Length: 224
Image (cartoon, rainbow, N blue to C red; front, side):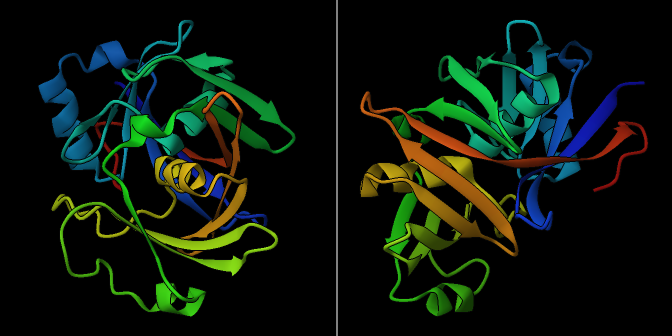
């Protein structure tokens, strides 16, 4: 029976929050995009990852409705699980490293195209938004919590019609915002999650945070 590893990615300093991630470590046990998409839809996590080659870092990422070329919290989670220094999603080679209790990956904002950011006047306005707000398309709602310190309050709404009304922690969207603002950020997202970002002179952006194991379950009995 194939196992599913469930991690919490981008947990807050107190261990709360974090976006749940499903990881099928034996990706070969679920061959083909159709079968993988069906499993991701059934699990209902914001993303599920299939590891096709742990040594090379080859990974395949799915939301409940679509396959992704790149995603932040899945790659941070897999880097922690495998202890990898490089991952290879379809978008390209992604360096990974660990620094204290944080795991970091490094990619490009263009890999996260389609995630629109919208600034609000205050963190309270972001907190007051319904999940999801009216409208279509990916929305990353944010406001400065402490601009001098680079602290942002954010919430993420995929608005894909796949059952994920709000994404608890989204590294790819935080990467886009970091690219737009051109500075390191500490993002407070969702209920209690924290995402750290760092832009680099070559145009790449690092995204990092804490990862906690949740459980290992049989795919025959898994429930979200």
